[in-house]
Length: 168
Image (tube, rainbow, N blue to C red; front, top):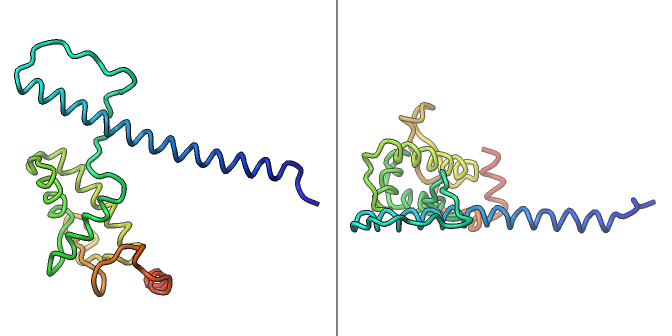
């Protein structure tokens, strides 16, 4: 016999998952807007504005800085791995990303943050079989390159290729 309220429970769980996804998207959007407001404040200060800037209601200063939007990091890594003939280090990728953002790659905090983010992105790409590592397990000496053949995203990979990559 079926569980009473099974349809109701299923519907509530589905709605809960939708709301959680919405909340995640809103948090990301809030971080982007907070970064934009901070950039405008810095520009006003650079241009010599002396007045008191009112705090934006509902927008908190975020400690998380959004450098890449959804899937941009993966796309950036794959594009850079395609461009290079040989392996490339995570630090080199991070410095390219920092320059692309128009920032100074000598900023240690920014570079360390970007190396960490790109390292996590490369780890995901390696688990999907889109990239492979070369070198020692020490992350400062490890480099990545495209897996055999051209780099492709998981959306371009056939299920058979994904299974074969997972078996490796």
